[in-house]
Length: 169
Image (cartoon, rainbow, N blue to C red):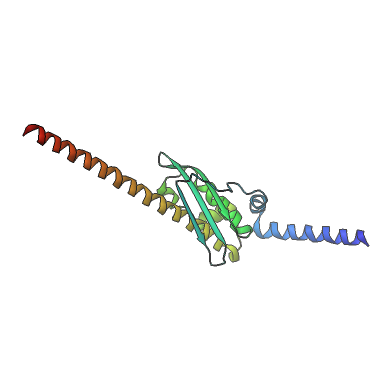
């Protein structure tokens, strides 16, 4: 009896894996089993967390150096497609400038995976939107830094002019 159950379970698992491979492909299955770039980055220059219509969330963390992403990580509480799409979104972000990050689309992610069934493509859209949101937050920080620097430089210039004026009177 036990051998019959074990045989049934083995055949069932083999059939499920065959169907998954047909629907999602080997790249998807490999990345699902071993997701790359998964984790939390405490010192990220930008991060964003978005919730999709399905209820899954994806969070993207980006670290920049000299205007390019040097490290990217993702975190999700979602299903296998969310894991795979988040992983590819992080991978596709590395080495890119903020402008190039905005070129990462759901289609870019789906092409990197190879194929993704229509009913789960919303995960790719969520991953791409999360990257774009992180870029927005990064750019806002950069503008704020530029304004601070500009204000400091303006104050320094005004103080220098004031000192020159006082010295000449």
